Image 1: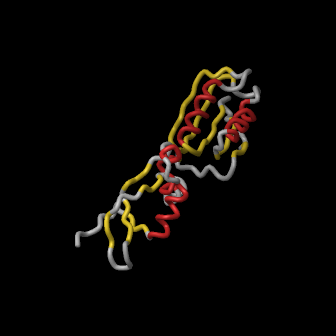
Image 2: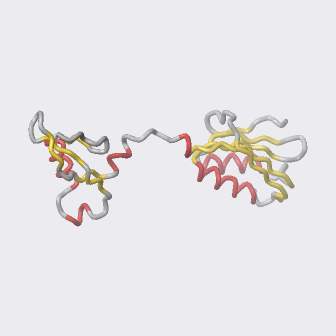
Image 3: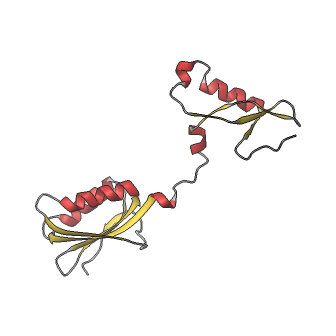
Length: 162
């Protein structure tokens, strides 16, 4: 008997019938799903045969890790210009919370604002774009972003001036 490739699944007949009932047999029901046609069903307890089994791709997502570290991004940003006394920190907290980011924001004695953003890469990029504009009364003249390994903590908070 040929060896079974690791990419193949062993699907017990009762599970196969459950999937077929859940998926439905009409093409109109299954047309919107993406399938992997590489399953194995057993025809008895000791014999296996290759039979194409449609497995919805959505079944694979439950087996994935909760969040891949490659999709999480942490960056420290420094925003320069007229960014103090214009509600910049509170605006940053509101926007970061809205985007589901973790981190902090604080004023710096040189008149700039510093922040740490951590979360999904696209949310961090969106927050950086928002920070380049800032709240209505801010005038942003400089923006720097640096990759960071700092711990963002839980939630998003305001830190004391440094």
